[in-house]
Length: 396
Image: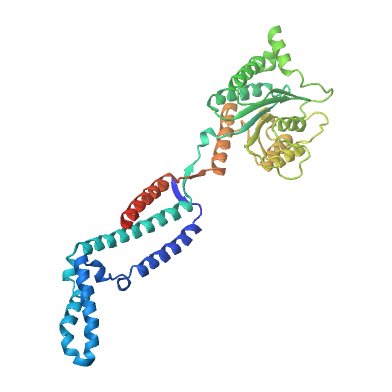
């Protein structure tokens, strides 16, 4: 659901004070005692002339009061009172000038109201009205690297992992995906890319190369062409003698595929897009690696790369020490560890990992703040336009 917020609410408080002050100022300036009109100015020219003559007569009469007494000026005084006293409204309110004065007061009142409304609109606009919009997690941007152990015992499960991601990539929109395979050395099959045509082509080629490695019997029954395809796919992963499945080295090679990776990082490095690795291995080490699994996981953590572990060994080794170490290291780094122990297929495990990544992304970024000034600008423009019209009419 969309929400409405003020980004700068303190402006509303300041604006409210200004509006109250403006209203008080208008009330003070337009108080009745200060705005009673001069009756003489409301009279027509003929009546104003009579009033002037009456005033002159009164002055003359005042001079004669000293000699003749006040009684003789009573008639002139009554005439002046009749013309100028505010309480006697008959002749004044009946004049065209009085009607114009009433219209003037109405115009001033309307202008004052419009000015207050315009100030209210200006304050609201200055406070930055905004809406809270939910983010679409379905199209979240992520970087994903498939990091596959291709030692002999894991090849059948690698094929299933690749097949699962070939299906998942159909729904990818802004994600970038890459793949690296390793044994004693590592090989980048394809780098991080959002060219899904290339990704699908490479994944299909990998599936074709791994076709026929389900069991040792199927490997023995490979045709020369199949064996050549497999050999081409695995070339570059067995360049060190007397060593196989160097998991730590393979994981660091996968981490190095992410932009900004630092092998010497000592603190956690910020990352713009979430980065994750799906590490598929049985964690059976043979040889002396440059990086242990723990060292590789530490580098991943410092570079803000999430590692999800997928155990691809046989069921007999589920409770082995190497499997327990694999689980502990993945959990410590912050990823999820999955096995086929509960009867789930590799495809189900891969889908479960991807679902958790999307849910985590949705939790980290659930809303977005979007400025919405348009309706306020429209209302403010209309208020000012009407205010200028009213003020121009009042001035005339």
